[in-house]
Image (tube, rainbow, N blue to C red; front, side, top):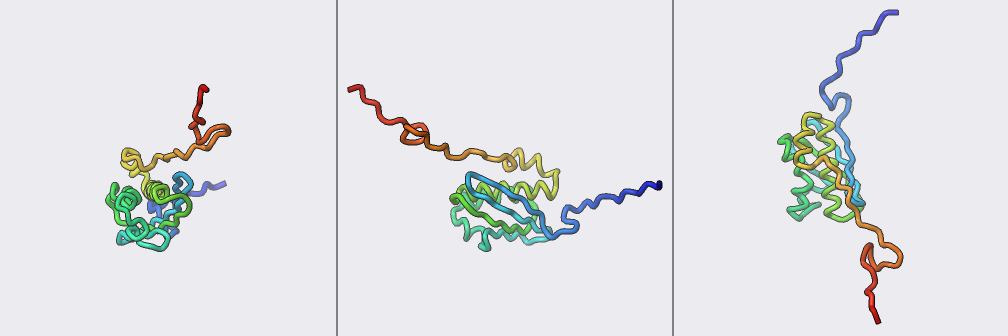
Amino acid sequence: MPQEEKQPKETNPFFGRKYIRAVGRRKSAVAVAQLYARGKGDFVINKKPLNEYFPNFVMSNNAKSPLEQVDKKFDVNVRVSGGGPMGQAGAVRLAVARALVAFDEELKPALRKAGFVTVDARVKERKKPGLKRARRAPQWSKR
């Protein structure tokens, strides 16, 4: 039985597809990022430009920070839903960072050092029975 020669693996991560997709979650927000190979640097969230969707500088800077870390030009299209504005910005940041890692595995150490690859799993703690909030107990009176 003749052995088949293995074809060399294509080094281009976009080989056979138009974009790389990645998912990011933060609190109850979910973001799906699409990273396009050739781009001018357009960043679109829910069919709106980044600065229009996140008018606050902190949130827009939080969302685009992984791209600034690696200094590469990509077109990014993101669909985000659920949660509040800060949770959505965190979900977008994680989704873009994961897409960049899928594009080039060598970017991972730099993104990890900046804290973009780590999932922030903090969510609001649930209210417990007999308490007013998650940990706040009713006021106690001796008499």
